[in-house]
Every structure is written in C-alpha cells, then in structure tokens.
Length: 573
Image 1 (cartoon, helix red, strand yellow):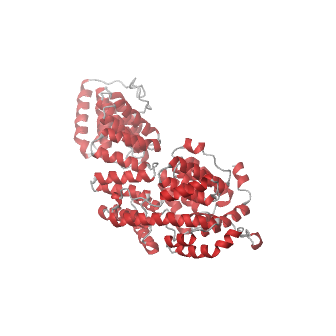
Image 2 (cartoon, rainbow, N blue to C red):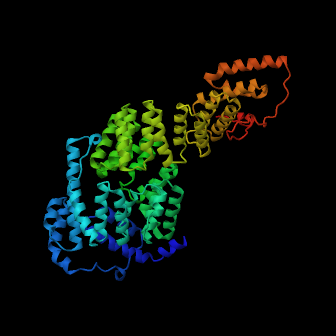
Image 3 (spheres, rainbow, N blue to C red):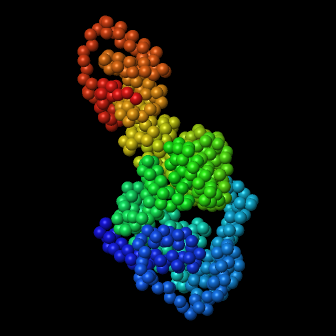
C-alpha cells in the first residue's frame, strides 16, 4: 500500500493527466479510452481554474494540417471513414497520420461487419476479413522500424497485428505503446486480452505508472485471481477513487465471477442508483438476476434498457436472458444473435447463445457458438465448460475430459468443474481419478452439494462400504447443517444406505434411527419400515452391546472426517 500511496499521493497531478489524455483521445476518435478517463476524472475533485492543464503543444505540422484535420474529423465522427482518409492523405503531423490510418482501419472493419451481417448468420461468419489490414501492417511496419510512431499509432499497429493473429508481435508493440503513452487505457486493455496466464503477466516489462494498478486489478479479475483483484480495487478506493463507478462495476464483476451473488447484486444496485442510465456491465447484472430467478427485476431491467437504447449489445443480452428465464429459448437465441450482429466479438453473447442451443438440443450449433466464444477469449471458462457438457450429451467422454480439464485449469477452485471432471473419469473407468476430483470438489466448497453424494456412490459401486458410509454421513450432515431443501430422493438414498450399513455392522440403534428417518420420505418409507421390522426381530433374539461410534470405519486412503451419525440424525431438513 505504501508504494501505491506514493504513486497516488498527488491526486491533483493525476486529475491533470486525465484531463490531458481525454483531450488527446477525443481528437483521435478514441471514444472508449476517452470515456474511461472521463469517468475516473469525474470521481476526483474538480480543479480550480488556475490549476487546469495547458493545451497540448501545437507544432508547425499541426498548423499546416489544421484545416484538413478539422474537415476529416467531422467526416470521421459521422462514420464516413473513406472520406476522412481521402482528405488526410499526405498530411504530415502525428495527429493527422494517426487519424488517416485509423480511418482506413475502421473503414475495413465496417465493410467486414456489413458483409458478415448481409451474407452470413453469426454462426457462419466464416473467413470474412478486414481487407485493409495487410496494407496497414506494411505501412506501419516501415514507420515502426524507422522509430516514427507515437504512442497512439503504436497502439493501432498492435491492433492490426492482433487482427492478423500475429500475437507475439502484438504483445511487444502494445508494451511499447504503453511505455510511450502510459495513460492510454485502450492499449492496456488490448494487452490484457493477449495475456493468457499469470506467468506471462509477470514477464511483461510495464511502466511504473498509476494506470498499471488499474491494469493489474483488471488482469487479476480476468485470470480469476479474485482475492488479489479485490485487494487492488480496495487499495485504489483508499488512494482516492472511492467515487469511481468504474471501480464499483469491476468489484461487482469480480464478485459475480466467484458467485458471491448477493454481494454482486448489492453493488450493481448501488451502481444503478449512482448512474441510472448506464448500460455497461448490465448484461452481467442480468446474469445474476437470472441465476436468482428474479423475473420481475429482470423484466424491469430489460424494459428500462430498451427505453435507454434498444440497439446496444448489452440490451440484447439482457432481453435474451429474460426470455431464457421464461423458457422461451428460440426468442432468447434470436436476441443473442442480434447482439452478435451489433458486435461479433461480444463474448457473453456467444456463450449465452451456446447455452440456448443446448436447451433446444441443437448440439452442433451449441458447439459452434462455444468455439466462437473461445476464439474471442481463450480464458472464458464458461465456453470450455459448455463444450464439455455438449460432448457429454453426445456421449463422447474423451472430448468431455479435454474440455472440462481446460475449464478446471481456468477455475481450479470451482467445484462444478471438478464434479464434471470426476464424472468424466468415472465414465472412462478411471475411478481413482474420479474419487480425487469429487473429494477435491468437496474440499474447495461444493456449490451444488453433489460431490460427496457422487463420491459415496462411487465407493458403493467399488464395494468400499466403510468409505461410502462415511461420505453419506458427511453428505447428510452438510445438507442438514446448511438448511438446504434439496431433492428428498438424494437424502433418502443416503439414509437408506446408512440404515443397511449399520444393520450389517450390528449397530442396531443407529440403523433404527436411519430407518425412522427414512419413513419421512415417500420413496424410502417402505424400506424404512421393513428395516425397522428386521431390527425388531433381531433384537428379540439377541442383546446388542453398545458400539464405539467414533471408531475408524476403514483403512482406505480417502481422507474423510469421522462423524457420528447420531449427531446429524437429530437435524431436520
């Protein structure tokens, strides 16, 4: 924190830097970077008039190109990119050269998107490419080798390289762009999309600037290192950015990623109070409302966003989630397709569309959608997990194992990935690996309360009755302590097994308690009554000595707590 305080000690200086970079971004049509800087600047106290930063220095080249640049920028703002580029050709200033190259790049992107929308559906977008990329690369490469590119043009060169799948070169150029202009958030964001793991992040040579802390917090969130991300954002809040809606939204996303749904919902509601017309991140908010089955709130959010801007990607995703919650999966898929027509690189829309195709039993379309999501972002564990589920439906366990492993690598402490891995190993008759996965899922905090049950059933299949009994005991204890109302079938299965287990081991008091509890469940009632009759008959014949309930039940290697069933039988679900 000390280093951070040192960097953030002069908030007035940071505010001046933000005001300067906002102006630079606006002049070059870099709207999203300008918006990010503006939101941060708004979170800081206003500067008095005499503290405002001076205008950027004006060179002879700038004066020479002023009229052409003013005209071209007006065309650029109206999305007439070819026209803008035409009037900038031959200009000498750095600002005019960037806008000239950026206009050509955006012209190619617009034509590519138009061709994709006109001729192909989102799933069949094929190999439609921006035809301007290769020419831009050649021209920018020459300037780069001559050392004539400024921070903004280096950023554009990096984007061109990324689009051409020259990722290693792109990373190097983005790092160079960040060193040349550390305050340009767009370059940091592009770099973040190319960082695949923590080792790669540590190997990057980044400038010591206050924006690095925002970048590291963003990267920790992306790499699912949520504890570290939350600490970074807390430090930024303490350093003076407590009013920043950007930081609130990022903390909410971080809580969403670790499935702390209540905390994330509270933050999104706070965000909506502070910025009621905000659309950014509202698709993530709708995911949370979907998981909690909050239909009225999701309906209100969808209607509200339609009133603000119905042609935003986030709005389409929210409406898609709303229809999905109502089980209208065809309509939901249609809105996710609309989102992808607006932005073919929208990660959430690809993944959610894959889920909808799964619901409609269209596995081939689901596989395509998930693969597109991975193309956009290889760190999207939901797409890897979705592919695993799809191949599970197609009964292809080797494929399942591959995709679930990928999802597990991205989310090592997510019990759902571990349970899915365990099931895959079980289907491939690799029971030892399956047992390890189920136990690990229980150890990291089993979200769905299924790991112990599956582990118990696996022990049961392998005739490891002592271990099966211990797992069933832990399962029942977990369910009853949590007060969770799960399917009675699963609890009754555990009670049935434990009743028979204790009966075979001549622990008739415990067997009798399990049998009595079985009578609470319709599907186990008859078996419970039958076991009580058997116990009664045996007791008539023999006097049973009391047993040590805490004696070890097995020498097997499965690491489990020894739990007395009498302690947990007294709980009620």
